[in-house]
Image (cartoon, rainbow, N blue to C red):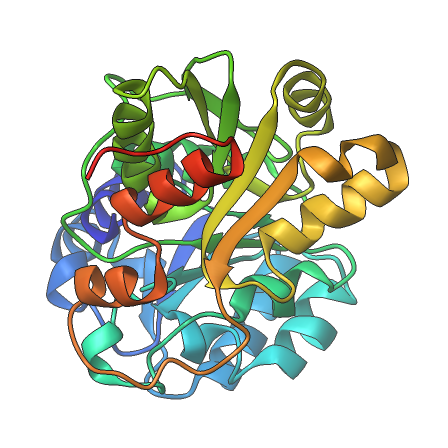
Length: 312
């Protein structure tokens, strides 16, 4: 995802003088092509993330389109006050881009784990939240960001994520993408868990469970029409996210149910990380297995809820 981000930002900056990429002293080689193509549109703000958000706010107020980029906890948790006051209060068109969402940096310990960021940012007035599911969705989200007139958070994975789409989709703020269709249940996959959702759907298909998979690109605002359709036509709707069960996309959907369709509550299930710090060490794939976010665990939870048995 980060390679797609760098490539698309290079294309955007080369074609338009308004976007400016701000980096928190990471990915310097990653942005070599951007710096060559548009040297005045890249600023290394150093390990000073709070200041970087202030710079982004100033640029946005001056007619530019800033994108502030670094690792998720450092661009969200560390600078929440600046995002709230400098960006959201003034409702400026600045995009916060976090790399390493969820447990992408699982092996680096709790300072690099990102399991609360959606909760933090989606409650801020004027903030929108996008979670692309593969590299092609990253490109689509950046195009949407250039058209958006308020603060925006884009949550990226890291690198090496499988590409799900055959071609670049079109998606905007408040949108979602249906990437697989089935008649029994729906998985609403958030961000880089989209490939796991696709594999879980394949496992469920072996047990004659037809599974729709939706990439829930926009966590705030939610795609209400998509939710209405799926709750009306499926036996089960599941949110799947590499984020705490408290405050994430699943919580946002529960709020939507409460406000718009209370009868849908019985059809809804959340799969997420527990409301606890993850204290083990290992790769992201290992962390997912431990937390029940891998495709086999997801398929088993869904099969159990539907009263089916998944083959061993």
